[in-house]
Length: 523
Image (cartoon, rainbow, N blue to C red):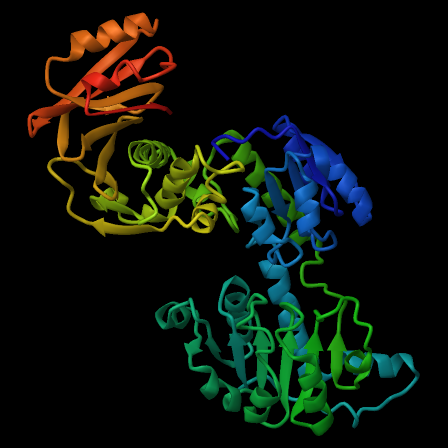
């Protein structure tokens, strides 16, 4: 996917706020709204769509992705993307985006409501009243003041829950493998190892994604380590709390109550948990507020418009390189990385031993995340069986057996603010950016005093000096016009020359008797 993407038809397959369609159409993007499609209907509709926007109802499986002949982007109007086969999308070079902040407040507020409902048994008391009863003694609750809340997952939602429940006088502790203890301390959460958290909590709420490492995070073993009567809340993803273990803990009294907005299977066929008297349940309502739906619809539409218009991206799930690809200061460097990859592969076919990428200078300190996929794009340009872009470049390179390693040197070479070096075997290229133009500065130790713009059709050859008249004569025979000529410093009696041609030469056979090496590249 190259900036900017051209999207002529986007399918919205789930019910979304009308603002989503309005924003897309306002940017000149055609929109087709069809919610409630069967899998067969979706397979038929997706064939000629450039974009797809879903909530949680549509399941974007691998066969849906394979059937999409033109699809460039899948937008999830919400946080989780477990209804999208991200791996299949990545392999096909399809960008997956979500709206990580769109429903955070609504999910956090529902969690807080669940905590209060558990503490005072509000839903059960309300049901009792509707049944004509007046059981004041049956619904003895607890105050939240002074109670300890364990928050597993301290991202946007976990943070908002912590801030709100602290206002009730709750002590907030938590765990997150990514958020640092210093960051969580800033919003009042003391981080502890999980084994220390279990026995301290009166309430435990989970706010992690559903990953192999978080599946069954609360299970028979961890419930046994908890304080007897612990209250559990899951408004994140079904499966983070082992439902069988939760039911057993409820039955034994080890768990005093649970509030569930999500289930492993939705809707749940097994009603044992839902029907347990100490369980409060909702039909996955975390993002079900007018504000969240409007926010998510607006955010995903604006992100797709940004994609089309070549602006910096947010919410990229599988194409983190694209988050930088549209920034004005990174576009030329991505172009440089790609073109150097193409030239390196052309000059040396032996890249099986791996490609080393070195960035020099403070401006490229964190550039590896977007430069490595761009290098992969260049290396695979002539050999890949499918389209290679910044989304799937690294994955396809790995599958092709290409090992790309990267290192960074804070000190720039010479007077350059930033330099990019690629090497494989005995071949090494050094390039940089002049203005917005990617240029080659050095080839195998030979320096070009006037850097070579990496664009169009280029002829690389190594020969003794003063061979240019012969080369011009050969180009004339081939009816190719020489647009520019660059030569390097002399090493071991020879120099590298790069000529820019008006058209590609049909053959290099007549040239080869005069030169040590000759390679033609179209960038």
